[in-house]
Image 1 (cartoon, rainbow, N blue to C red):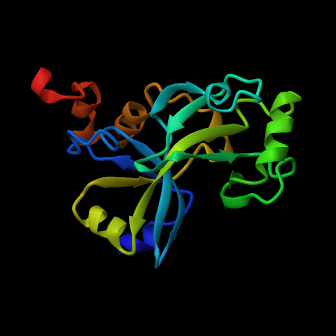
Image 2 (image 1 turned 30 degrees about the vertical axis):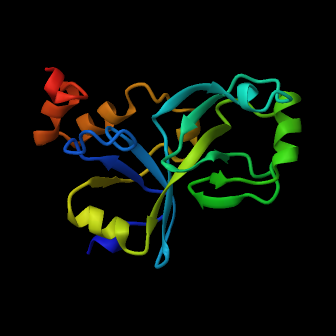
Length: 186
C-alpha cells in the first residue's frame, strides 16, 4: 500500500510527466512530516537568487535560499544537521532537523560555527492536506525514494539532483534525464 511507504524523511521525486508546474517540475522534495492530517516538505533543488544575508542583513553569510514550495513563501524555514547547537529543533529523520531557535542560529552563523553544509534555508514549504499526497501518488505524480544521503543531503548540490535521481531509477526514466525542461522547446 502506498501510504505505508510515505513517511517523513523520504524523498519525493517529481515524475517527468509533471510539466508546466513551476513549483514541482523536476523537483526533489524532502518529506519533513506525514500523518493523517497532511504532509509537509521542502523542495531541495530549486535555489533562488537570494542569500540569507539579502533577507536578513545582520547575518554575515552568503548561504543560498531555496524555494521550499508554494505555501507561505513569505516565511523563512530551515533544516539542519546540528541539533546539539540549535535548540528546539524537531527531528525529521536520519539526523536531519527542522527549525529551532532562530536567534541562536543567527549568532552561530555569524560566529562561523554553522557552515553551509550544516543548514539549508527555504522560502515557503510544500504542503498537502489530509490524503492529498496519497492521491497524487495514485496519480503517479511522485516517485518515493529513500534518503540515502541521510543528514549530508543538506550540503548536496542542487544543480543536477533531479536528473541524478531519475538516472538512478533506470529503465524508461533514463530517456527523461536529458529531455528539455519544456518539451515544446525541443
